[in-house]
Image 1 (cartoon, one colour):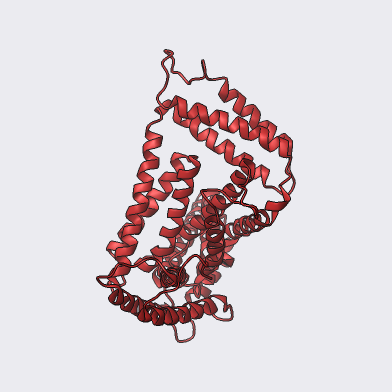
Image 2: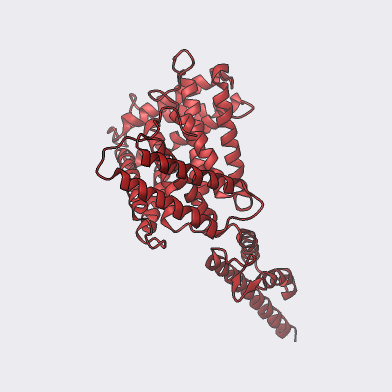
Length: 446
């Protein structure tokens, strides 16, 4: 699990903490793999409390000493990463521990966007909103601050992410307003070409179509610069112009390669394509198939491949760096996968996986009822019977107002109850509208 570069702890006390943390991490891994039962809140909280206790001991051992990162720090990170995803799985998304994994992913994404110097205002806006939400969670955590050091750590991570985000936002502000749509269009085209380049079947015509779009944008320049109606060079023109040239250069490289990837880099490429494709499938079936803890293995695989770079690039057995085409392709796949993980995390509902089957059914019912309402309602109350029966069957599952699973009361009761109430309200509105229409018809007929 740990890389050989990370040294073992020298202090005897730290070694003991390491052993106990490894045992906790192993239990979390086993629980993650167990699909026979849903994850129970009490099971997660026991392991969370044990981890917090070990970190407190570790902090006491290190108090007043200068320490270098060792294997204990890596295992602590693994434990909190897993616990963070478990908090999402049990529906406690709005508590500080749940923010840990998301801040890790955001930091990775921001680092990659900075390195690639390729991003849009939309990319940054989403992460800005997420960081704002995470900051509110940390400051108003429902966990009653049993581990203030963890909340301080997450707050520091959020601050670091905001600092990176601010640097990237400044780059966008350095582009004149009229030129920003063009910059965003170029980012979109380059990403589309990266997708085409990594498809199982390469289609040159799709690249040529993007090349034509790029030529149109390139022809908008005058003497290599983007100018306004009065012929003045627009702010940020040089950077956007460089991006146009970068896109056109990439087009040529991709067409030359014709979908062929060098054999010596194929093993890493195949792993990354597989991760990207699996995460893509999860993003389509998330509501029904995703357990948030599944994301841990994907994230760790990506971290290991990403961290295996030397001075920003991968090197072969002879120490030779990968060529530009290989580097860009692999970096795209890593960034795309981190992007999928980010979106899967922020799409996680604050509902325990034990209640997700009910919650998902209600989501589907709500969508159907909204669609019926938007298409003009129903012609008779009888058409609403299937919806009414389903809603009442779900409502009847409650015991003393709670949805129970065995003797447990899973997290997310409020979210499920609110969604059920919304469905009942929609059903009622449609019924009243149908009855009113029927009465009006009877009156007009008589």
